[in-house]
Each structure stands twice: as C-alpha cells, then as structure tokens.
Length: 80
Image 1: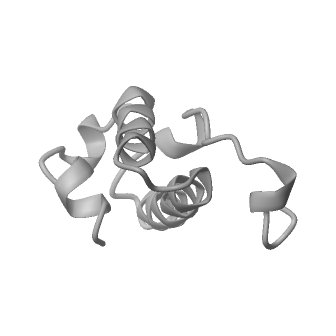
Image 2: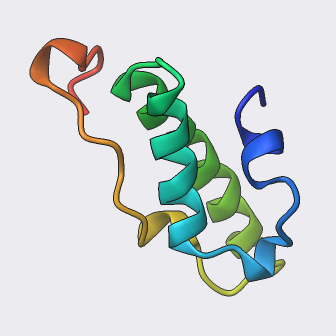
C-alpha cells in the first residue's frame, strides 16, 4: 500500500494502462528501493487486478501486459 496508492491511486482501474505501472516500478527503483521491492509491488497489483477482472469490474488486467521489474538471481527469494 505504501507504493500502490500514491503511485496509481489517482487512476480509475478501467483507465489504468501498463505504462502507468511501468512508471511506478521505475519510480520505486529510482527512490533507492531494489528491483525486488518493485517486483513485489508488481505481483501485488497483478493479483488485485486479477480479482477485479474475475469480479467483472474491469475487462483486462494491465499488469499482465506491463514489463515486470528485472531482478538479478541474488535478488530472487522465491525463484520467480
């Protein structure tokens, strides 16, 4: 929530585009956070938007189209 609401909270879910998410991931990393943190944010928003699609609130999940933050093997805790 620390990153999601300030980063994309002003966008209506049906108007959210992959580029909005990619800008959010880049901003997180520019602020000094790791790619792992940005990747965790990506997984969280992807999951939330999948639920919104399942419930019929939106028709597509822009997080599935967004380029996820790249992690080095040493940053991967769960092998993702």
